[in-house]
Length: 141
Image (tube, rainbow, N blue to C red; front, side, top):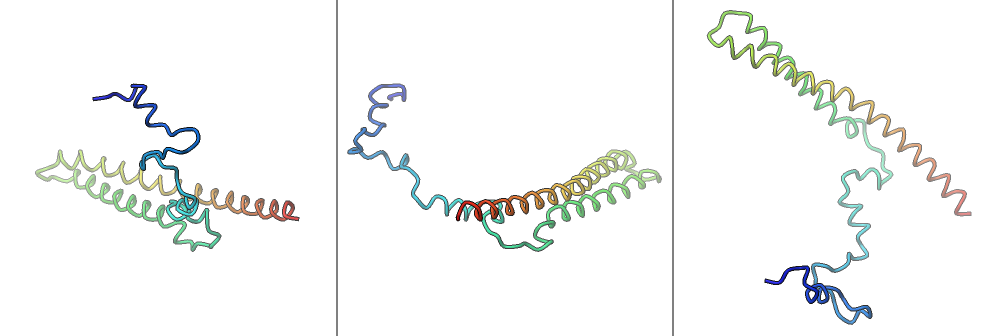
């Protein structure tokens, strides 16, 4: 087996300076439609498009996280209060109750912190779009 540090392999893998040899298909350069592909496959398409999004589209993730957090927190509260009563599995309730309380509280706080972050991003995006429009107004004259 030939290692990749072998000069003959390295020389063959590089294309000639005049471009007469073609590189292997796996190392071909990206085509010119890369920008449009990036635009389509982007995670945040709102950066590429100027369409306005509804409040639900903007805030649905933190709302879901807060709802799940509140539900888990309430479940932990119920489990913790059950440990105060006489049951067979009192030790299990004492272990699981605080764990659910802490996980629920963590999700609830994460959702609550996420909302101001989204608002700040929205303001920055509006400022950026305003500055871009000003720049295009002055430089396209």
